[in-house]
Image 1: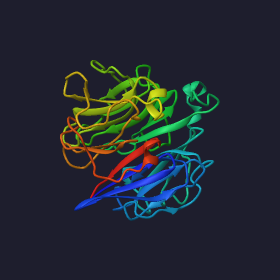
Image 2: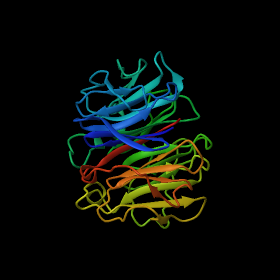
Image 3: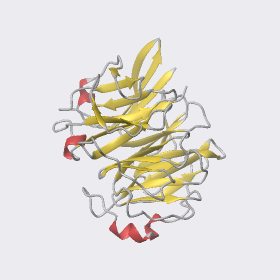
Amino acid sequence: MSTLIAVLNHRILVARHAQRWHLSSPLDGYRFTSTAADPFVAGRAYCGTVNGGFWRTGDAGASWDRIGDGPGAGHVTAVAVDRHERAADGGMVYAGTEPSHFYRSADGGRTWEEPSDLNTLPSADEWSFPPRPHTHHVRWIEPDPVVAGRILVAIEAGALIRTLDGGLTWQDRVPEGPFDTHTMTSHPAAPGRFYSAAGDGYYETGDGGGTWSSPEEGLRHTYLVTVAVDPGDASTIVVSGSSGPWTAYNPSSASAYCYRRSGRSVWRWISDGLPGAEGTVVSHLAAAGRPGEIYAANNRGIFFSSDAGARWSALDLPWEREYESAGVQALLALEP
């Protein structure tokens, strides 16, 4: 059974495929921000909110339980689960907040500890989120799928930092790295390789974040929001983006695009099966477990590609009118 969790601004949607696709909305009324699956507990996933608590499902999204207020002041902006470190209850859970702090939980999100303070890094004085320049937040957390303890953390906006010991110590941004990473991904078949979709373009590293390059030939829209990689080929990448934030997130002014790159080829705009750019917010992308399979969610629906983003088809789902005016915050494909 395939299960997708789409996080909208104020609603969680769960799409399940059993003979056909079914769509439900098991939780709403909060400002949702992020989601992540637990690789050690089948059917378990987490969701963070802005002052609405920290939530957990144990049945692949069918029902959700609030398991506390979440770390810090409860403004949880990023969630991830480690694939290496098994804790007392599932995997080690990581959460980022606004203002920027990094926490971890060994008991499935019930209690949290802050192993060290990110704000002691030299670049911290320059971190600032443009719509609220007095503050900043952790936008994304990407644990290394191969090297235990190595985690990359994106600060919006101002830095992409990393730890090599699970958050006990931190290494500051490097000069050629992305400044405004929105999301990242990695690939277990490509040790040390990370991919960044950033407001300042596309970036990738082959040495775990020590150095970065920015291959952008063919990429005409460089305000990038999400990135996915073919589970069967670490060199085939899909990104979503627009010309800037105003055309990325607001359905009334949106104009969003997806691009694909394979091997050393240039980026190519892809539209086969996806809705037109005008009025479509940026797609959130999620790779499934099988080669070639990638999902995309935006305000027009949820879409599927079996050939790593070259062609798409809309899932047969009852997409309500209210979803068309909503922003998408995250998309998660749960492994069967």
